[in-house]
Image (cartoon, rainbow, N blue to C red; front, top):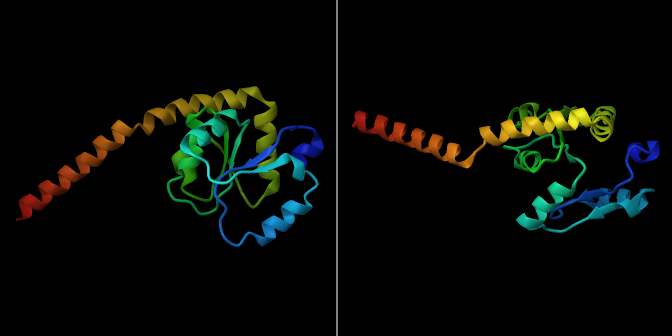
Length: 162
């Protein structure tokens, strides 16, 4: 709402993915929202659709408080989309400098980060450069090699104990 009211952003908010449980409060807030016509909800999206959404997005908000590894913000960054994510979870470790990290409980932090990404091209460029480093760090062949190394080391330790 603050981005729309200030004129900083004229696009739409897309909330993608299968709906979870206990959404009554969300549904009521959405129905009453003054920019409801600019909020799009999808259902399940395929991998192809997901990556198309990433590439088409002006920015990707991932305001999770509790998170596992954090694949969605990593995927968005690797697709070239600037990411804003919460610093409360493992996402901050996964993303490093590849995202603007905010306090998800502080709407000023979130709005300020979004305004910066939408109006300051140098921040977008910096995040895109960082995403190239993420691409190198999280290559599947490297992950497979590291997993194999751990398994071989565990097998060796087990064999020497027998």
